Image (cartoon, rainbow, N blue to C red; front, top):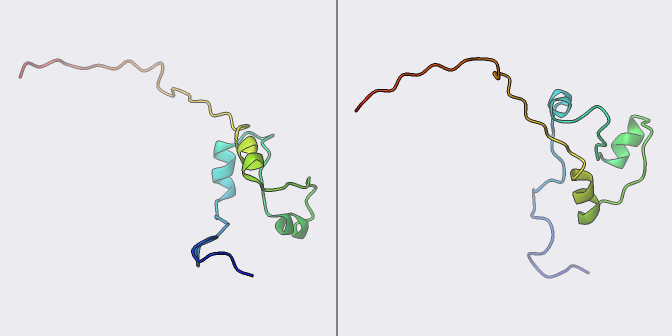
Length: 85
């Protein structure tokens, strides 16, 4: 039995996104836990833990991300001139 019209996922909308491993390595720590599709993990014979994808569980997993900003030019002197307009 279908729910009311308009509920659920929009036709053509996807639950997956493609991202390069390099991009993941750029933003995640080496020990970060990444949520992936169970079938994909089984296909690759990965050691993994079962995970129920609820909103609360996904938000909790996202909380582990620790972003640190680095000032790459902290030792560079900035020179400027003031002009009267």
